[in-house]
Length: 247
Image (cartoon, rainbow, N blue to C red):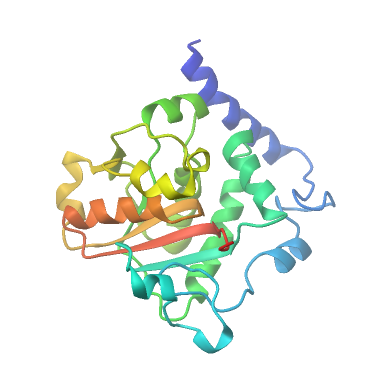
């Protein structure tokens, strides 16, 4: 068996085992019939305050539905963002388990939380199709899966929106944004993405929903949105499980 196949199978075998074994809440360790128990879900997911309708950063309650100062001063290429939660303790550890621990059973749960956030977002126009943020070939081979795609698959079914897993490609294996200084993250993502040649007709004139696990600085999503619009997309909306609050 090739090394790539072993890496591809390992997280999926763990996910299958988790589906058949008794479940404990990934946050509190208590008994649960889902990856996260209902009390923890109510406590840590959703129910947050107002967010900027463009970048999903927190706003004061009086500014609900408006744009934050950063988006007013320097509008990103994307048009809207919905986030299911803040990227903060303890949900940050849950995301890390999915991304780096291969806990793929968490992906459908994240998708469910994100679907509820999308349906509850005031004034949010549902996209016509979904596009996961792609990984570069080396990162994908190393990890064995793309966590954005693992979330996008069940999200597509929950929302009834078509998923195009290979709509965009990552033409450069850029360093992980978490390892790049904040001031260099925008430059790190320059020229990182392309629309797949056989997907050009799919992109033109469409409203595309970009799916990712975490949105931090927003530079990755901005670069992807700019690429999609350069190839003819009419609108781009981000749908992310967790949003890192500004420091």
